[in-house]
Structures are given as structure tokens and as C-alpha cells.
Length: 330
Figure 1: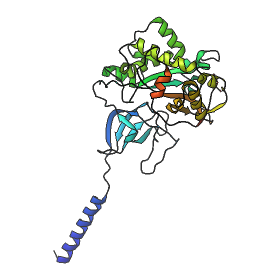
Figure 2: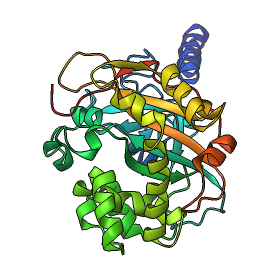
Figure 3: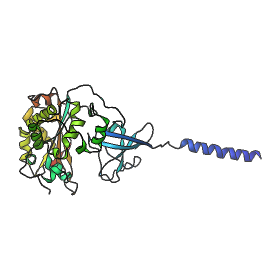
Figure 4: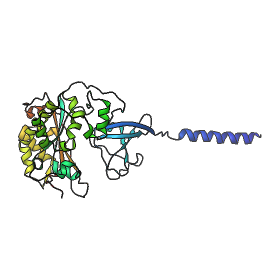
């Protein structure tokens, strides 16, 4: 073989090697896990292009199935998000954390940080009209003019499923709430919960107990009595009056937070984040769906919420403006 030909072959080989070395390493890795969202991050169809059809965002506290990650030292997880089109979306790893599909139940050290999630049920029902509690809602029912209980969540957000078996965790994550073991509640508490947590009709109380309540107390009765006591204080204040007097109108997050200041002391409103959603069937303005109320301290049946708000975490205002939806489907 001539020297010229050998040089030519060597040059081709070196060029091929450099071409391989210069290519970025993409290695999709399949995962079987659950992702707990901590921020309302964008859910992308394409990481490189940054596309997000439907402007889909994660909902903090929600758990999503994980399909995989983009590489070993992942920058993004691929999640399955119900209602998105396409269904599978990429999110940054910093937006939450993996629970670990095969992780054993865990005990989280005790702390006194809590998030009280109080829902405006008519708006929620516009987004979930097929729910049992939504199909039966009327303008005369408690939840048409009062905030209702979604849950009381020990913080941080990873503080979930304490001393709960993997079988129960799997049922809960699959939203098979009707198959969760029943919990021991007095008849009085169960009846009150049926009014102030309409989602009980869909077994929301079981989901909330196993996911969050088990990290709050060893007694479902205590957990729900104290959750209701906190909710009652909000509904007995000017905050409920603000909502009830503006049904069909719009409120800003500033107005809502100002009313917390008037009801529970200066600075209380800075601990409240307003959550909004759009009607799934209509192009319409945002509706106020929920308040995230940040609390800190030891909670007893007679604990004034003012003291818990005073120590609570300061948060962003959230949704700037939303409609206070009336009961019924519009």
C-alpha cells in the first residue's frame, strides 16, 4: 500500500473518531417512580426547543408518574401528566423530588410547619364536574358560600406517608381511594367532615389521611378535628364574607391577603398564596380555586390561627386575580 493511501485512510479514521467524540451524550433512562412537585414549573414537550403546548404547569403537592430521565446525571425527568397533550412532559429535576417506588415507609422528624389548603368548591367543580360531590352541589349547600377543607399538610412537602405500608401507598398513588382501609372517626366528626370536606364523597378524606395525616398524628380523629377547627376560624372571619359577597365577581390576591390582615393581624396575608385554574370546557378568566395558608406552631383544638399565621412562612401572592365562581355549571 502506498504511503499516500495509508495517510488518507488514517485521516479518515481520525476524522470519524473526532466526529464521535464531539457528539453530545444523550441516554434516556427508564424509571419507575413518582415525582412530588414542589414548584409550578413548566412541563415541556421538548427540552431543546422549550415548547409547552397548552402552557402546562405542575401543581405543587401533586404526585406524577415518572417515565424516565434524560441521562444519568439528569437535568430533567419525563413525567406523565393527565390532561396534557402530548401526555408525557419534561420537567427540571429542581421542580420537586422523587419518592422512590420501592422506598420503605419513612418517619420524618417532627416539626411545626403546616400548610392549610382551603378550597372554593364551586370553582373546583368547574374543573372536575364529574366528581360525585360536584354533581350534587347546590347554591344552598355549605360549600357554595364557605371555604372547604382540602387538607392540612405537614411541611416540608416531602413529609408524606409516615408509617404507611407500600401497598397503601400504591393504592393511593393510583387514586384507588375507595380501596384504602377505612379510618376510625366518630360519627360527629364524620358528619361534620361530610359538610366541610365535600370530597369525602370521593374518599378524599382517606387520601388526605394516609398521605398527610399520618405525618401529623397517630389519630385520624385528632387530625380532622384540628383541621376543621382551623377552617372554621377562616370561615368565621371577614375572609369568608369577602368571598361570599363577591360570588360571580373577581377578587385580586391583594384584596384577599388584605382581608387576612384585617381578620388575623398585620402580615397574616403575606402567609397566604392564592391558587387559580381555568374552566376545562371554556376559554374564560381564571377562577380562584384554593388558598394555601402557611402556619407554624403547635396546633390544638383551641389554638388561635392568628398565632400560627404570625409564625408562618412568607410566600408569594400566587394568582393575581380570579373569579369567585357561583355554584352550578356555567
